[in-house]
Length: 111
Length: 113
Image (tube, rainbow over all chains, first blue to last red; front, side, top):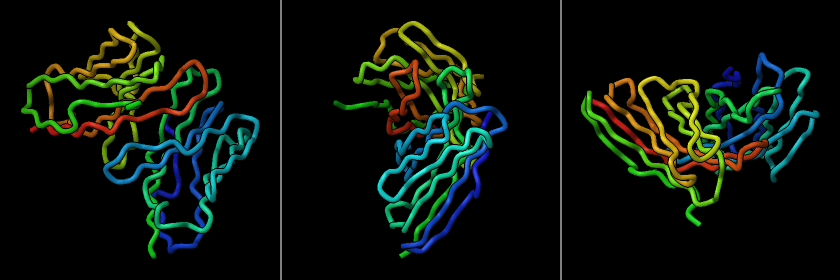
């Protein structure tokens, strides 16, 4: 079942923070996060496994709350290079390690 | 190490024509996937394969067929193209069998008129 991402779009100025949410109605085993720039392929950011872990990559971090069946991606002090569409992919508990992707959140960072 | 490659990059078809998209990976990955991406819809899984000689249906398989005769290649076929199949097609691969990042190819932009 396709996870729900919110918001659909975010517009920021350089240096501002943003949070992108991903939620599912099913019990989750893992959450993937990818970023896609216009005209390019999605690029992997991070995977979070159940256990409530939090991971980080430079100024981009994420959390996974398995009880709430949701994950949040945190972008701190946004840079122009952060612009793009962010997708979460979720794998259901007891599933087949095949992620289902959300519809994406468009992030635009202005100077 | 080329990663995941897709052929062709662009294609225009007339309704009713057929074509095959080729995906190749050189990472010895077990799992391979075909997605389509339409505006506002995210990535939707068409078919996938968990190993050489195996294929399975994804979320939107109608109108497509696939084959995985060699581990490194995953072919997506359209037997009779329809305008609704106008989309960007991405291939991806993973080691599989465990939670792992997906490596995506550069995409094929297909227009059916």
